[in-house]
Image (cartoon, rainbow, N blue to C red; front, side, top):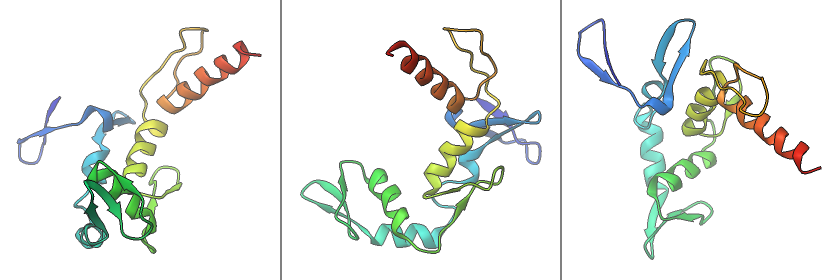
Length: 140
């Protein structure tokens, strides 16, 4: 999706996974909370990751992943003094990525409906929990 920025009329590309609609205003939370918005934190994280035997490893605890971004996201949980607070509900998340996902999943106005009953107007997180409830009821 492309959207125009009213201030300079340059198109802004949005990642639909993080497009949030609230009060008739659309915004892309990935533009607010992304790697690079805190250079000091990003540099600290970069110093705490290393490649060992083809895997990206956390120098703090040794956790590994084949994906560098996964390890970097994990490393953020080790850094003291970093808070990732949701500006909507004040919930605190362990990483910037988790905050992005929380806002997308808990606060989007995206309307999900249940295909098993008449329940409508659920956000993504509520819809997932609702489907799990149907599964628990069906397996009793």
